[in-house]
Image (cartoon, rainbow, N blue to C red):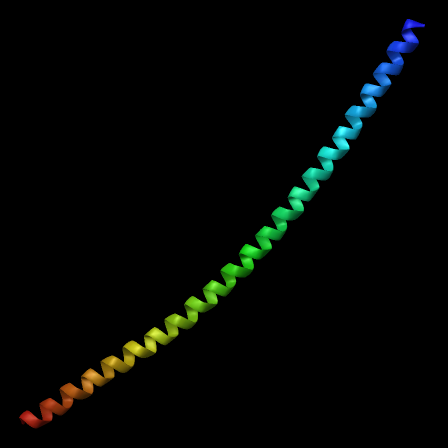
Length: 83
């Protein structure tokens, strides 16, 4: 009789452990899914930032070239006046 009670208690403990393990597994899977979502979001944001940097770099290059060409033109005009 005592053996049956011990087995019943052991069975209940095992059921609780299994339920807790299922719960932990569910939480782990949810965490992994959220991690993937965050990773995708970060990758998307980084891609957008890289694109903006690329565009700004191009604009800055054009701005610097135009400034230099303007300065060069001014120097050429001054040089031709001095001759």
